[in-house]
Length: 167
Image 1 (cartoon, one colour):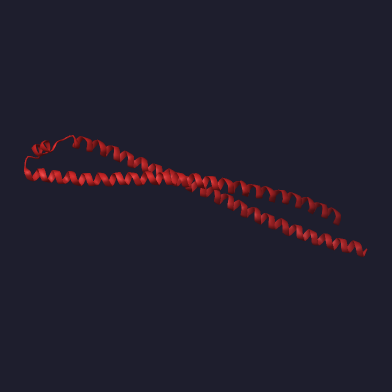
Image 2 (image 1 turned 120 degrees about the vertical axis):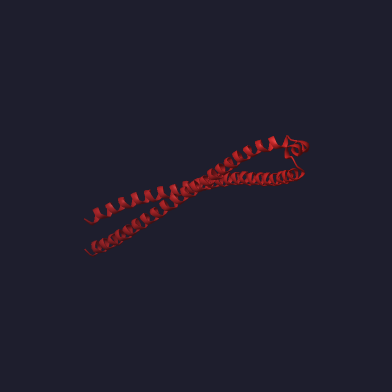
């Protein structure tokens, strides 16, 4: 009778431990779920940054192409043509000055285009690396979650077994 009481106390203690363990497993599972969501979110953000950089580059390329067409039509003229079209020496120098400003603006546009291109390439590398890293993280978390699910199943089976012994 004392042995049965002792056995019952041991089993009750084990029951409490299993209940706590099950709660801990649920907490860990919720934590892993949050980590998984964060990993997917990081991947999505990196890919969105790459898409945005590509959109920005495409917009700059369109602007640049349009500017190139305008530049080309102006560059076909000789200084003599510009002088004749200007009508006066003052207008001629104003036109030449204006062309120099346009050339400077064109250089800024080229620099801007190069920056956008570099950014798109960088964002692509970041997106690829993040996706690669997060794929590893995701598979690790999924394996941990599967192990927790397996432990939970085992715990429930042990719990039922103890409850049967108790009754």
